[in-house]
Every structure is written in C-alpha cells, then in structure tokens.
Length: 354
Image 1 (cartoon, one colour):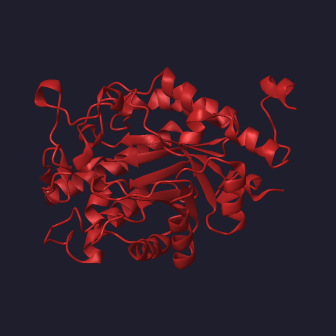
Image 2 (tube, one colour):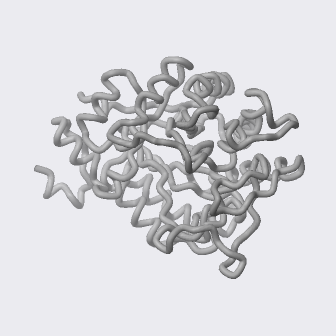
Image 3 (cartoon, helix red, strand yellow):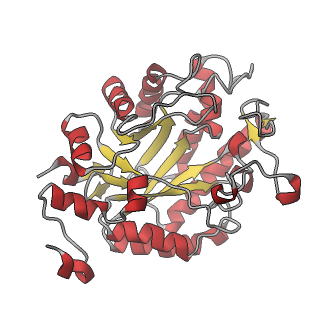
C-alpha cells in the first residue's frame, strides 16, 4: 500500500491515513462563534477522506484574534457548536483537531477580502501585544510589550482554551507557534528585544512557547497528542534558522510533544520567501532527522505523487495540505485512486466510486 494511506498512530489516536487538513482561517465567525460555514467547510473535508482535520487558528482570547472574523474558544458559550462539528467530523472517520492561537502583534486586522489592513479605532481596533514594542510593518501600530502579568494571562488563556477544546471533543491540539504570531514573535530574534527572562538568549526566547506547551500538557489528557507548529526559518539574515528549529524540536521532544508541524516565515514583511511547490518540505526533513521527532510537511503540496514521495523519502510523517483542500475537498479520495489504493468511501457516495 502507498505510505500516504498507511495509518499513523499518535498516542491513543490512529489517523486513517497521513493526510491532514492544514488550519486555514475562514474569517467567517462572529464574536468567535462557529457557524454553518465552518461545519460544511470542515465536514466536507472529513467526508472527502482526510485523516486529521486541524481547525483554523482559534483564538484563546479576544485580543488574540487576527481579525474580528476569527474563530474563538475563550468562553464556554463557544463549545456547543464546536461539539456539533466534531461529532460530524468523527462520524466520517476523521480525527478532529484544533489549532490554539494568539496573533500577538499581527492581531486587529480586517478580513482579507476587505483589504486585510490594520483596523482603526473607528472600525473596532483593539490593543495588540507582543514580545517587544516593535510594529510588524510600517503600516501597523506597535504592540504593547507584554509584562509579567500579561505573560501569565497568555499562558492561562491557552490552558483554559485547551480545557474547552477537550470538552468540545477535539482529539488533537496544535499550539500555533508560527507565522509571526505571538509565540513566534518571542522566539525570533527579529521581533524580541527583551532583556528579561524571555529575551536575549535562545533559552530565554523559547521560554514562553515551552511554558505554554507545558501548561497545556497539564490539562490535556496524556493519551491524546499535542502538536506544535513552528516557522522553521524566518527567511531573513539574523533571524530564526533551521538549526534553531532542530534545537527547539529537541526540547519539545523531551517534553513529550508528538509532532512538529514545520511551516516557515511570516514574522517580517521583508523576508524573501521562495514560495513554490514543496518549498518547505526540506525543513520538515531537517527537523525530523536532526531531532528524531515526527514532523508534518506543509507548503504547496498539491499532487498525490508529491505527497507519497515525501513519505517514501522519509522527509516527514504527515502531509499537511492547505490550498489544495480549498480547491478539492475530496483530495484524499482522488489521491487514493491515483495511487491505486482502495479506500472506503461514504455510503452515500459509493455509486460514484469507479
């Protein structure tokens, strides 16, 4: 059988295949609440055969949202609809996961189809926070540097969000430490100019990500997996590097993190990112080989043969697909046909399985 359709065990959870739906913001929530759009969006990918569905960046606090349209899990009232979604996803044979996130200095922006600019006070802007009082770009306001009290609130918000995620029926938690959002802004030297215990040295800069991870582990069941998404390089001189990522992954492995989801970039607008097919896969391979931990490969993976080759070459353990799933919710079913693997189709669709 093709490796793409081999099961993947993560603690007590077994994914039916190595295909995961990458967390992709839909910017379609109101006050953090999920709705029918999210149910159909994620539910159709479960029907389409994905092994793991990772729900989009879900804010652990209102100020942690990228935009007013972000999903949230900062209050109990968010739980019931999320439960409904997860029950449907699980009924289709997929595993429901959630990405817990805080946007940091990249928060308080309009939704992309309205331009995505930083919100103004007249349009509901809120105060952003970050590792240091450094604006992301010339077009965004500087955040407030988090003090000790603010840092403890962030950790507490992640913990409360993980507890709610468990109640809502998620089986996998992914901690979002990538793309220039809060946790990434702490570990990257490009955005962290602190002189306290959370700045300066490598150990200090990774401290918050490790503390958040450890705090989530305290409330997340030991039999359920935790994933951490990182930006494996800043793509900029003087920034975070692949070697840094290996050292971070070694720490995460020691803590018992199950998989590192290896994305890149997002921390500065000046970065020159050579985006193209499979452009990030090498980072998943470096982290996997260098730290001896399972990794997820993500980044313009669009073909079944590409995904299969990544696994055959031992570059990653999980194929995390984003835009191709927007184009084709049934990518796994089509991939199975292309790779000549017989997989189960939903009963309702079997008349089309030829």
